[in-house]
Image (cartoon, rainbow, N blue to C red; front, top):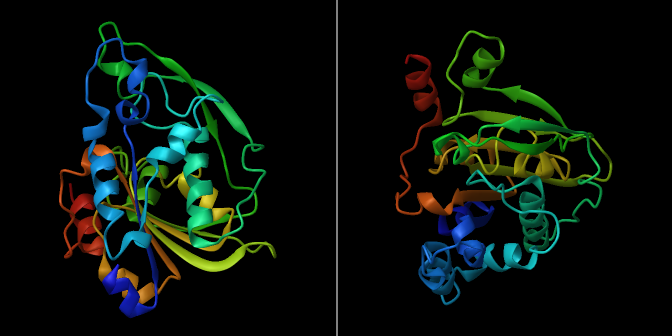
Length: 255
């Protein structure tokens, strides 16, 4: 936050809570003590920090979203499109952006899949999930080598860490600010979650799949907003300040 302030950039850090943090009452057995969840503990400490405004607590946001469409998949650790939409709206309020109200009304595909928890059961349990394509106004205008080689069939490994994409939105009503997002699968380089929702809202959105920030990229791009999103289960890993996106891409392409 201090580094961004010196660069004239608005910094926001947020954490995507685990299902056990938001929905502990749905467990047959008491698997965790919700009050001790890392995201709850971090929120309490950030509330009294001099940089309190840089942290957006999503736990109450997702708790408030209960009761409507599911906010998490049953056989997966990830949130649903509705869950990410709740977070999207909270971020927009936090940074003073006008949220789009039509993002639920976008093309979708219902697809039966083995997800990251269902595939661990014996026998595996598939789940039908709704994949919504958020983008209608925005277009993906660039993608790095990890993504293009995968999409062109030259690479079989899914391009996760160090993926980098850019979306441009020429719509007159788009927020004129540029957003740089460092995140994980809860954001995604495909427009099926936070990245796509933000791409429909801001003039430009870049997404980098990384828990660590590439500060050389930040200084080169000088976005208006730097948003860091992290799944709660990764809070035990301390991000590094020496992350080099180009070097990581080269390393992964050589695998």
